[in-house]
Structures are given as structure tokens and as C-alpha cells.
Length: 249
Image: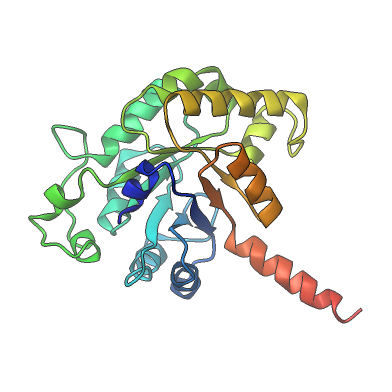
């Protein structure tokens, strides 16, 4: 089952863990552990296109979908990462419905979008022939938008009304920073902004995701109607290393 089809099943709770470390081994470990998706982070991670391709390939043989977070809402980047075999794109800094429409269009081939054809690497990852790739994949690519600016909050209803959006993640670090309250996730302004995103996504029947680094945090998100939780490979690694260091005290 593709990640897009999992997202369409409202009864499923899903994981989509962020890989910032340029390692096919790390990605393979997370995928084989049962993660529904990995988000290969080319925006904030230390990952180039060669590493991204290896990380995408490392999900083979698992049910884990490789998504890529690109550095910006740029059709050229989207085309290249999809042609590496990515199953979807996570778009940062979406500020308006126009931004959202451009993101959706970049994922689809004409006449439904603007993507150029050249899946010379991607068709193998999808286990199809080159010429069958378009028909097999075009409507299975996932579009995930990050809401992380004041502009996005102001325009969230219009953003959610754009057809073709599969998931929305309110990016708490960037959003709180743009609101002038960086890291203050309990601040009333931040909570008001998040509540507005939650209402708009629910009204549009768009699944929501967020960071859940521990089970109580994940349980609280699920209780609020979130369907996707994410962790970060580098934060897990640092946390367990710090915990192990404490054993020597």
C-alpha cells in the first residue's frame, strides 16, 4: 500500500520519521523497523542528491515510503528528487494558496501538472517499466505542506482548499520563530495559530502531522486528531548517547 493510500484511510495512525544523517544504513534501519515513511531532509540535513538516491533505494523491500523535504518550493528540485524515486515531497515555507497550487502542479505530469518526464532511475524503485511509470505513479505521489509562517496562518483556509494536498504539518520551530516567540510552544499566540491550522485541516479533511519524540507526546497529538507523528534520527541518537553517558555518573 502506498503512503498516499494510507493517508486516505482515516483509521490509520502513521509514522514519518525525519532522516537528517546522509546514510542509507540509518534510513534502512528506520524503514525495516516498520516506519510508514521516512522524510529525507535536504533542507536542514547534510544530504546531497547522491546520498538521497541511496537513502531512497534503502527503503526497498519494506513498506516504508521515501519522501524528500526539498529546500524550497522549486519545480526543478521536485523533478530531480522524484526522478530519484521519491514517493512524495515535503514542501517548506508554503505561504499562500498560490504556493500550494504550484507545489501540487510540480508533482504531476501534464495535463494535470508541470512535471517533466525522465524517470530513468525512478521507474526501478517503483518496480515498473520506464514507459509505464507515468500511469502507475502519477496519482500516487504524496504532497505534504509545511505551515511555518505568519502568512501561512493567515491564509490557511485558502491553502487547505487547494486540491491535491495529502498532508499538512505545522512546523513548530519555524512557526514560533516567525511569530517572534521562538521555541515558546505554550505561548497563547502560538497555540492560537496551531488551533487555526487544526480547524482548517479538519474542515478540509486533510491529515495533520507533527513531531512526537516520546509516547505521551504522540498520544496527546493523536487525541487531538493528528494522524502522523515524526521523530528525528539525529535527536534520537544524541538523546540515547546522553542517556548512556549518565550511566557513568
